[in-house]
Length: 249
Image (cartoon, rainbow, N blue to C red; front, top):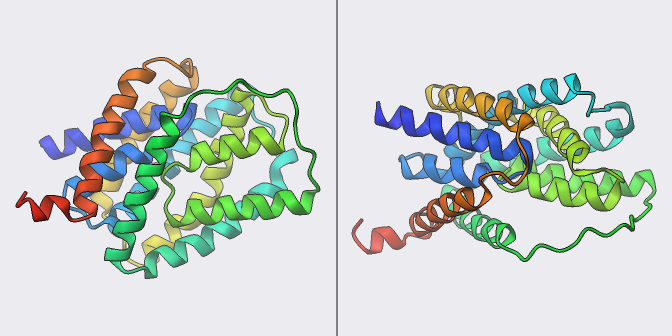
């Protein structure tokens, strides 16, 4: 019962964080790993929750007329193709290698979370559509492979490539992640990498968090969330890099 409560609460927090900005998987992946799931299984199991969370977020953003799909169809398709390829790599990767990659990514995401905030630049880079397609293919490739921190990458990329404000950038990010995660879940499910009883409970929490997150201010509770993520990431990285085992824990 305690396990289920932890999973559900982690899902609520992750859904809230992911809908507003990103980084929720840096919370749920460590929880899943600490609960005994091998990192490739945790990575796959987490995707079901991500899918349902972004379905809720997409519907809510659309209701408030913050989401326009037509202008981002080309980058959505590019991200889907990249994510399918990335997820195929993820299911074939050796668990020990994946542990190290995931540990490094979690550390990088932690650094990203605590980086000094810079003022937004009014300047935007105008890119050809083919270059946008290449960029979002690469983002989708990463998202299909690991997912952790992809929200930050999407927001940064949308801020550079497209003239989106924060609310619309989040709406577009939620929509694109929903689209490519659908295909990633199929790949992981066919590879028998998903623990469904965990993923569905986590998904219930993620959906509630996403519903709340659409209505919430971006910076509410940011300090507390950073502390929780920091502790979870540090402990998970100690496990992923085998340090806890060396200490006999």
